[in-house]
Length: 154
Image (cartoon, helix red, strand yellow):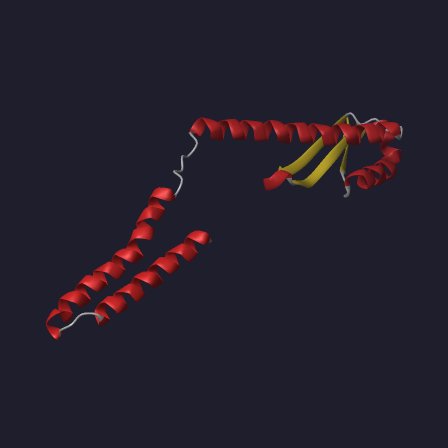
């Protein structure tokens, strides 16, 4: 912000100096030449800080494609770890209830900034637990927040 103030002050001072110099010209004969010189002076005062600004800006360097692939690989590993952790905790919760699930499948999308959007999940249980389907569904819904699809093992 200080650089903007300095720029504005330089332009104002240059304009004031040009106005004073114009008033000091003794004859009309030099007036056109003096107007041209003063206009160039003010123009230089306006352009110079803008020109210097280009040198003051930091140079930007874009990362190479290998860093993008490393970032994508890291993102995939993180997504896999998070999915596995959610499945593990859900499986432990069902097992603590006395309902071991043979397989839990999670359908999720991983958005920016670490947001996980759970689209759905299914729990595969033994056919002998068919009579406890409502209980299993309710426990899973309490843990995750929405109703799972219940599948049966052959």
